[in-house]
Each structure stands twice: as C-alpha cells, then as structure tokens.
Length: 417
Image (cartoon, rainbow, N blue to C red; front, side):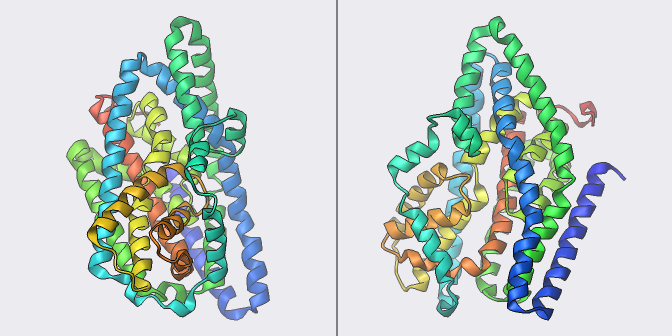
C-alpha cells in the first residue's frame, strides 16, 4: 500500500474512532469530566495545527517569490494573475448567488429553535465585529512588518509582501539568481517537512472529532436537521458546479485530481482548517502535474480570495437569521448584501471562525440583530467541516485550471512521485 493511501486509511480510522470514543464519553460521563476530556483531547489537534502553522509562513514566502521569479517578466505575472482573479471573482459570485437562491427557496430560518441560542458564543463574535471597519480591513491586507505578518501567519499580508519581493527579484534578472536558487532550496526543504508533519494528521483528526461528539453528542446531527440538510444541498450544488467547470477544462484528468486531493480534503473536513492542508495540497498539486511556479503563485492567492464554501455559507446564514427574526429583505437589499459580503470577506481571511465574524458584521450593517448568529452556533462546527473542504476543492481546481489555461499542466506519465 502506498504511503499516501496508508495516511488516508489512518485518517478515516481516526475519524471513526473519534466518533465512537466521543459518544462513549458523552453518554457515560459527568458534565465535568466531559468538559475536561474535551479540553485535553483537543490538545492533539492543537499539536497538529501548530506544527502545520509553523511551516506556512516560510512556505508561502519561498514558493510565491520563486513562482513569480520563474514566471519571468511582469507581463506573464499579470497574465497569470488576471486569469486567477477571473476564476476567483466568478466562483465567489456564483457561490454567493447560490447561497442566496437556496435560502430563499427553502427558508431554513423559519425552522430554527430560538430557545437554543448559544448566547455566550454570540457575544464573543459580536465583540469581534466591533473592530471590523475600513481601517481594520486595510491594516489586515497591507503589512507594516513582514516579520509581524509571519509571526501571526497573516497569509494575505504575506502574499502582498511576497508579490512585491518576487516582482523585484524578477526585475533584477541574473543578479537575483542566487536569491531564487536559495529560496527554491528552502521551499523543497519545507515540502519535505510537510511529509513529517502529516504523520500527525490522524491524531489531530481523532482529537477534533472526539471532543465535539463528547460535548454535543450524536444528537447534534439531528438537532437543526432541516437547516443542516438545506445547507448540504447547497454544498452539493456548489460541488456540482465546480466539478462541471473543472471537467470542461481538465477533461478526463479530473478524477485523477480528486484522487490526489482526497487526503487533504479529509484533513480539512475533520479539522475545519484550510491552513492544515496548505503544505500537503501544494505537494499533491505539483505531483498532479501543475508547474511549481503556477502552484506557488495561485494557491496562496486562493487562500485569501477564493473561499467558495465560506462565501456560499455567508449569504445562506445571513438571510436565514433575518428569516428567523421575521425580517423581510427585498431583492435589492439581498443583492447589496451579496456585494458587501463579496468585499468584506476578502479582508478577514485567516481569522478563526471568519465566516461567522463576517456574517455577524453584515447582519449589524443591515439592521438584523447580530445576536442572531447564536441561532446557528450549535451546528456551525459541522457546517464548517463542509465549507472548509469546499474551499480546498475550489483552490485545487483554480490552480489546476489556470495551469491548463497556461499550457503548464504536465501529463500524468511525466509526473514522478
């Protein structure tokens, strides 16, 4: 059995074991023990995520700079970046519109139980949105110190610095070859570290799943069933759209891509963290046939600008909260909300529970009680699983499609493990 297949098997076994242990603890233990167990078992997930976060900043910087430098002239950088942004903006609009159409069709807000609101969690999120304004948006996008950006794993700020650094490196030509060669070596070292870090993935998955089930129990899958079901219908529809477009561009190679990214999808789904799979996704896309310079340029951009699952959830959740409070939003207001979400979501990538923070800020902007976010908090973890996996799929497709458009997608036979 291949090492990658073994890792996938271990992750799936860890998920099943996590559900079983979590349910056993939930049904056989006191509330005090359950709370203590959840805190302690999540340390496994914390270890895994911190190991991944440890390598994200050097990986983004080294791969993006090398990618831009290898692209060559600024005309090529602009052309590839333009194609990427075309995909990102189109995919974001489709995701937002799909969420808006489905929430109006199914009206899930009418079925939400107001008595089960997690008010304490809502207060925490409302507190975060008080700082959300244009000034904070600009500060989040443009770094004042690259060291600070790396320390805080601010991917969008790192992308901005790396683009400037990469363009300057490309402009210097031969003088900067030693820099490119050095950073290329750093990127390969970090990617080798990825293989070591991924060995901890099953433990991280086990800790995350068992903690949630121990706290919420299996009833959480039934509770709010209608809301979750309608959201999953939306996710399925979004996957269908993304895969259809992917098939139109990639053709018969689409199944091969899905096979490649299956382990990252499972890890993202289990840990609800796109960051957790960034290094592994980089490695798998290069093995699929995407040129390293394209992957290094597109993927970090996608993590800031191409969050398809999160985008769909934002319109879905915002309008569902309005429905729960009996607030009617006409079509013009909903379209305005869509555009606001399109802009505000780009400046808050990487923030924990970013989707909920954006939804809360948007609700306040449109006179919808922001505390309404409490209505969906009990099942947000499970919604987050699906939207995170969708974000990973969207970025993998974006990178592969742009590679194909650039005639830089190597045939399967040319790829070596």
